[in-house]
Each structure stands twice: as structure tokens, then as C-alpha cells.
Length: 114
Image 1 (cartoon, rainbow, N blue to C red):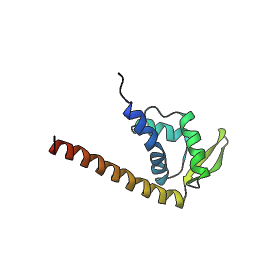
Image 2 (tube, rainbow, N blue to C red):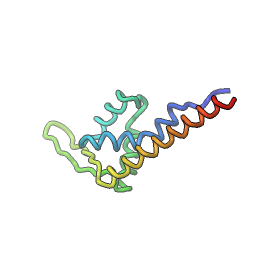
Image 3 (tube, helix red, strand yellow):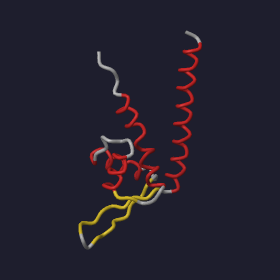
Image 4 (cartoon, rainbow, N blue to C red):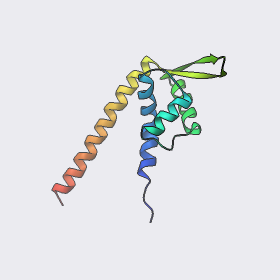
């Protein structure tokens, strides 16, 4: 019997939070986000995952973009977090902390009461 790929499941759930966290530090284009995410603990991140997520975050009003034109190459979208996105990032961080606390309590209570 094979187990659940917890890393994949948690990565999928955490990716929106991670993207908002990156953008809270400054604007970025998609390729740069992929590189930072891959080196920061999200090694399976690909454009086919990130770009639809960015589109959903934009539809929700959490991020916005502008086209940045470059004489040396093609234009690219530069993404920025919105005020609503900053509020959602705070909400997400609180929810992750609550979940971590709940999991810790469950592990501890089970160990205390075999």
C-alpha cells in the first residue's frame, strides 16, 4: 500500500501563501518566482502550476500585474501584491499557525494517552 505524498499535498496547499509572501517583498515576474520557489522548498514548481495560480490570485484581487517592456527581449508581466493580498497573507499565516498548533496538540495528546 502506498502512502500519501504529503510533500505534494502540502506544497499544493501552501503555494498561494508562498506566492503572496514573495510578492510582499517586492514585485516579480513569473520566471523569477519559479526560480525562488524552487530554491526555497517548492522544487516541483513549474509554469503550468504557477501561471494559473497567478491568474486566480489576480481574479480574486490579491495580486495585479503590469507589462514590463524590455528592449533586450520580450515583454513580461511584473506581478505585485495588492492591499487585499497583504490582508489575505496575514489571514493565511494565522490559519497555518492554527493548523500547526492543532496538529501539535493532537500528536501530544495521543502520546500522553496511549
